[in-house]
Image: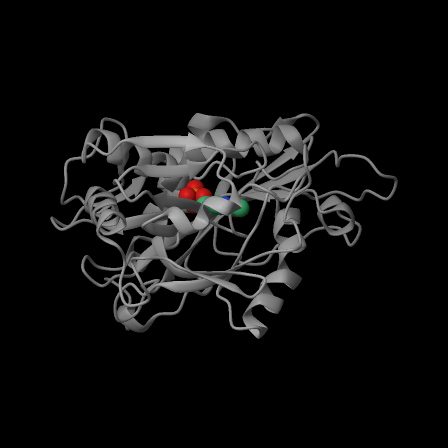
Length: 340
Ligand SMILES: *Cc1c(COP(=O)(O)O)cnc(C)c1O
């Protein structure tokens, strides 16, 4: 039985669901792992994660399709990305096949929490790993825990997709040659003060520049950036300190193969901002979130698509990708994993 929840008014928040997956790494090996009802983590007061922030995570969703199947989207890419995060943080990789299977098993164990088709809500899936044994001298932990929790989340946009206002940031979210390209909790700790400051000043997000020269556009604290040129090309920043968004990579393929849109991945100078026709953020949470205005130290750049609605090219891209995720449009081979 589906849970009795007002799906359309659900916030983007955490709530305890029935089961979560837990596997432990000890003496150089992962154990078999299990689904448990215990929603509390039990670790040393001196755990590596608590002292030196040795942790990384992933985020993906499960959906109910129009014909009533329950599916998830490209979990293999989350497994790959978590493997690169782990390697960079000296953490043991949780094997790809096991990662994907654990995602499917965890959703299946919480099937009543998957929101119905058409509600706008989805089941958010959060795989994460952390150093769990005591570490006081600076070194990687010897023991790790890999967990997957799921929680239903409401529609990202309640009452329609609305453009947001962002500012060009003076602070950085990542260092040059740092950890910007992995999904480490530490990148988020870095950005919390800046996002709160942005909100206090009336901006929805910070648009970060390349940390070495503050010349080129990178991304926001938790989403990649897309631009559309006046002649209808999709342009997205290229940099090795940007997190490789699975939504962005999927949208690029959708643009080329489904919509015949030309795509450019290149450095984007902040002086070019005024030349684009459309601009938006992309990530698992919102798919595409349109930007209506960019403020660069008092100079307002009004994106031609405006503050009322998403521009036509980003709208088409958003509808096509969500159509693929919700089973209304035929997906490329291997993108959709069926759970039920
Ligand atoms: C997770 C994340 C994204 C979005 O990635 P998706 O795979 O599309 O959800 C973008 N930027 C940062 C910094 C992120 O952590």
